[in-house]
Image (cartoon, rainbow, N blue to C red; front, side, top):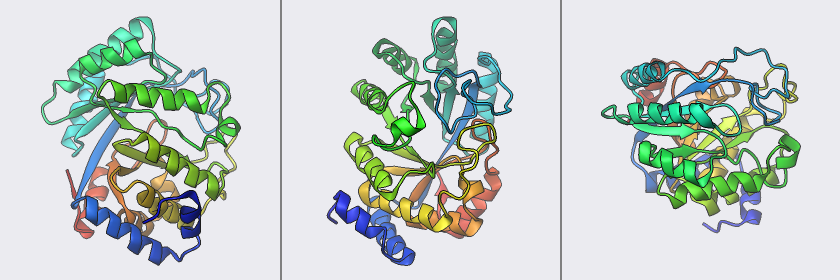
Length: 308
């Protein structure tokens, strides 16, 4: 299919069932019935210097969350082992803040080594705007995949965050790829952006060619500037967007991430998998509750899909 901005915008106007039929076919051409399962831990929560409007962890916002400094290495390792027991094949160490420094970064490297040593579990990380030297070090410690989302379109980015820019995020993704780390780079849908913005996001990701694309759907949190954004996007629009992303990114794993259990019914979550989702974030998210592993396994069984 012709992947242009104009064509993808046109596709949005087609009926949902027709879009799902197209995107489902693309998924089946490129993937089997296995769904990757990833779990995360918020190893450091809150007090972030960045002013992202959606984020409960930003110190510029006023969300009531439980902040904590960097966890100890043993706590993170225990969480990784528990995630493996629940079916996760990937475990991501996530920290709040622009970038970890000093002793915190040294301890994060220890965490990475411990998680990477667990048989059958791949180590991922999401640590902000790392320097090139830090990226070299996490690679050596055992990080196989790094999460750093573009979040929104280049055009809309300044409406969401002003303490860093879109190019900072793109540069980080390109640098981790330069050192042989797979890119996990996604978006947040439903922050007031237009369809054109969503198509721009998909095309920006197409250029970056990430391995995995987490698709987050805004879960408006009280105390953030976007707390009243519940009605900015409905379930049909979310499903259409999944289809559009699958068309633009035929070979990338599309991952259900934050917001899927609050913004989509169980029926529509299943439709999203049919449309092209083939990776799941299992367990809890950073500051909100997620799905139960057994519920996800049952849903996948009904769709003739398996966690792998």
